[in-house]
Structure formats: C-alpha cells, structure tokens
Length: 214
Image 1 (cartoon, rainbow, N blue to C red):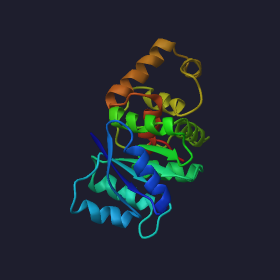
Image 2: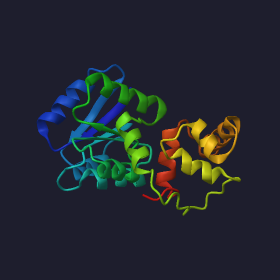
Image 3: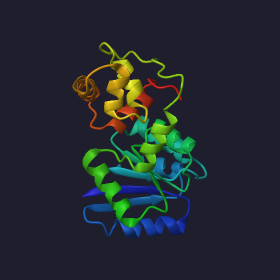
Image 4: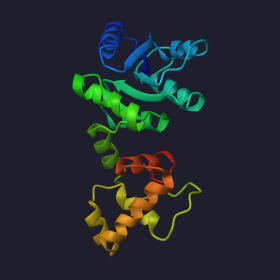
C-alpha cells in the first residue's frame, strides 16, 4: 500500500481529494492538513508518507517552503505539487525546491491516478505541462553555465546544452556534426552516469545542479 499525505488550505478540495485517492487501488491517505507547518508538525510524531501532495498557496508555511523542507529532512518522501498555478515561475520554483512532479487542480481523474502510479513505480511524474515548461524556459541564448564539479567527457557538455532545447536528437547530431549513433552514445552515457531514464529527467538534473542558467 502506497501512503499519501496532503497539505491544502481549501477544506472542501482536501476532503474531495482524500475521498478520491482512497478509492484508488493500492493508495491510502494517512493524514491531511491545512498548511505546511501542520504537515511538518505531524511528521514529528507520525510515520512519513510515501507521497506528499503539496499545494503552493498556503498560510503559515507555503508549498515552496514545505517542499524544500521535505527534500532536506525527509528525502524518501516524493513530493508532488498540486496547484491552480500554471505559470512557468511557480513550476520551475517547485521543481528546484525538490518536487518530483507538478499537477494542476483541474487535472482529469484518470490523469491524476496515472500520476500517482508513475510516482509509485518510477519515482517521478513528468507531465506534458512540466516537459513543455522546462524545454521552453531552458532554451536560452546564453547556453549552459557550468557551476558544478561534475566531470564531462569530450563534448558531453555541448550535447547537454542541445538536449535542453527543442531540437530532436537527429537535429542535435547535425548541429554537432556527428552521427546519430554518436549522439545516442552521449545520451546513454549521461543517463548511466546520472542514473536517469529520460530526456526530461536529464533536463531536470541539469536544472537542479546548476548546469543550465535560467
């Protein structure tokens, strides 16, 4: 059984989510609170959930602060943002605070269930909203600012910059004057090196580790 906890200051929405989630096979809400501060206090005396559904706009302790606290103090909890905010700034901010996915409150029930299942199985949920936001916001003229101590092989850094754009892998190969097979090799090497499974995961990694300048 995958356990879930919610933080949302809208009582009716929170109750509806609890009722909905408890109808899903394999999922159970173990507690729900009105803000981040209550969430943190509850964790001090109770078991931590597998997944935390966190709203952004809450009193006492907002979603950004709560997500960052969980990432730093309860890294095993997978935090999924659930908000009415669909702007780029909010999405990027939540991801940088440690959220592993972002859902809008008007998400269809089937998509919501899919998100929970993917978090359970894969450990993350990259919706079309998040993917499009990341690719759009990371496509900047200044390119990559390498601020980390991560060691790249020859031209992997250049490939990473192109991977954080809307170019296809074939187009990246053309831009780098390399064969598609060589580009596939760069991609797989980075996936293995950083323990990633997808291009969106690679973009998220680059963002969180300061390899991309927003």
